[in-house]
Length: 368
Ligand SMILES: NC(=O)c1ccc[n+]([C@@H]2O[C@H](COP(=O)([O-])OP(=O)(O)OC[C@H]3O[C@@H](n4cnc5c(N)ncnc54)[C@H](O)[C@@H]3O)[C@@H](O)[C@H]2O)c1
Ligand SMILES: [Zn+2]
Ligand SMILES: [Zn+2]
Image (tube, rainbow, N blue to C red; front, side):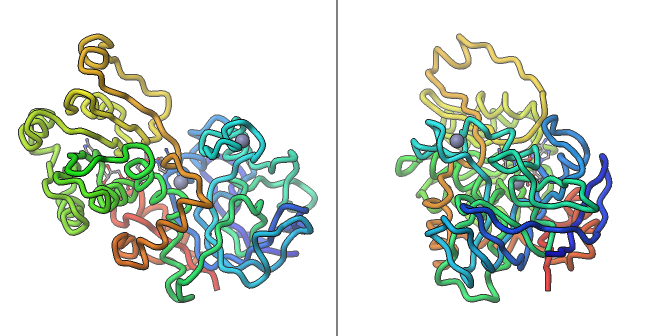
C-alpha cells in the first residue's frame, strides 16, 4: 500500500514523501498510526550519532494506533485493536526467553539497522529499500511491526490514546528504571538527574513506589517546579548549587539509596555514584555516546558496596510492564498527559526543534 512517511535519506535530512509498504508477514501486524512521539534517540539517529543506523530510514519508535491487518500466525491481536508500539526483540535468545527482551542479543541490529528479524525491509521507494527504525518507522501514517512489539491498549478512551505514545520508550525507560531496576524499599530516598521526559516519569514512579525523599536535579527552573507537582520532595538547580553531591547527602542524611541518571550529560554519572549511601544503586540510562567517566573502584564502588548499573528501556518486558503503566495512567498516578505538546505530522521539523530547545518535553505528532 502507499503510505506517507518522513524519510531520512542522509544524515540530517527529513522529508515527508510517499512510499510503499509491504503486507505484514506471519508474525506481524499492519497498524494505522494515530500519533507518534519524538524521542531523543530519533534525533541522535537522524544526526548520525548511532553507528548501527543506515540510511534511508523512517525514524519514529513511539507510535500508537489501530491494528488493520494481522499476519497468519498472530494470535494476540486482531483488526480494530488499539495498540502502543514499543522496542523490538528477537523472542528466541536466552535473554528474551528469560523475560528480559530489553537485553536481547540482537538489540543493536533490531533497534537501529532498519531491517526486521528476517533481515528484510517493509518500506520501499522506487524499488529501493528503506529502513524502519526500531522495527517500527512510526513517522508514517501506517507501519508494520512484529506482534511482539505491539501492546494491546485496553480501557482507554480513543481520545486519550494519543497521550500514551511515550509509554513505548521514554516513559517506560524512566518509570522502569525505578520500578523494575531500583525497586525501592519503603521509605527509600531516590535522586533523578535530568527532569526531562524520562526523568519526570522516574519521579512519578518514585512516588508510586513510596519513596520518602525524591530529589530532582536539573538546570531549568520550570522543569524543577513541574517535577515537584509530580512528586519531587526536593529540587536542586545544578546551575545554582556549587556542590550537588553534598546537597543530596545533606537532604538524605548521608546519601541516597538510589539514583537515576537520565540527563544525557556524561559527567553526571559520577555524581550519581558519589551521592549514594552504602549499598546504594546508581542506574544510568542516558544515551551519551562513547563518553567515558573515571571511577575509583575501591573507594567509590567496592568499599561502600554500591552498584553502578547501565540500563536500556527501563528493564521492561513491555507486554507485562506497559499494561501496568496504563493502569497507573488511568488511576491518575502517571500524569504523562501533562508532558506533551501536539504537532500535525507536517510540522515534524518544528517538533524536533522544540524538543531540542527544551520548549517541549514530549512532542507528539498527530496523523489524521
Ligand atoms: N536507555 C534508554 O533506553 C533510553 C530511552 C529513552 C531515552 N534515553 C535517553 O535518556 C536521556 C534523557 O531523555 P529525555 O527525553 O528525558 O531528555 P530531555 O532533554 O527531555 O531531558 C534531559 C534533562 O536534563 C537536564 N539537564 C541538562 N544538563 C543538566 C545538568 N548539568 N544537570 C542536571 N540536569 C541537566 C535538561 O535540562 C533536561 O531537562 C537522553 O540521553 C535519551 O537519549 C535512553
Ligand atoms: Zn532476543
Ligand atoms: Zn526512545
